[in-house]
Length: 318
Image 1 (cartoon, rainbow, N blue to C red):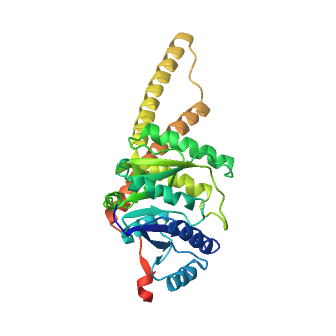
Image 2: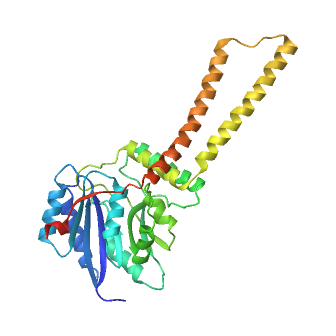
Image 3: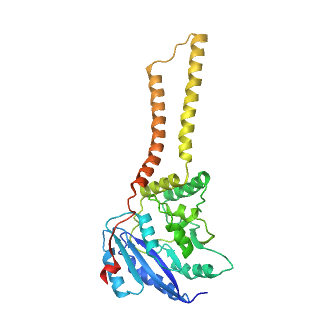
């Protein structure tokens, strides 16, 4: 085992003024318990509208040797914040954590112990929640079914209940940074790059302060982005739906003709025709929507825009 290894702790922050001081003190106490380790905190302010940046400036002034921060010019999203933190991290090991302390800091010593154990040949120690106690029932229901769906239609396995809270070796971090796509879905990227991962299980914890910035609609859109990023099955669904609609229309046409010839029963009037037109039109729009979603993602990739823009970081204050 090398002496004085470095552990980088990456913390994306969006309106976390209430919890940041508690988080820093709690995690620092846990890091001190780890032998032969230096550690650094890398806070990424993702366009917060409260006093998060002010608190990060104070922490960097009070602890210049262990606290660094990056502040975006606006809110670019958690995925961009994670990528920025990973790029800045220099550690032999890197851990990603949320500031709300729902990721148990007491797991840090165990995580680094597992990575240091060469017999395990582990490159990543992830975490997964075995319960969703405290979450709204509707959110838990959709979350469970999201994991079932994406693992059924994608070749990239995403563990049910897996959190972004994980500790990785330098080699795995470099592999993640090599994935430079604009439309990022970290849970999928962590799995797609491979490397041996061991999961620690824990029960769900409530935020120690503040409120979550993730609404149900934001989580839903994030889930859709994940499905589109790691599966082309929705495109196949559009094709199957279109083919089924065509076959059904042929069958119904034949039945109407037979009924008219045999029973001298003319076809129904405009109400049935309008229903058929609306049904076919709805199917077409649904399929076009799926195609449009994929084309939209491709459009954003071709623009080659940066994932984020840094307005300020700790080096500007030194």
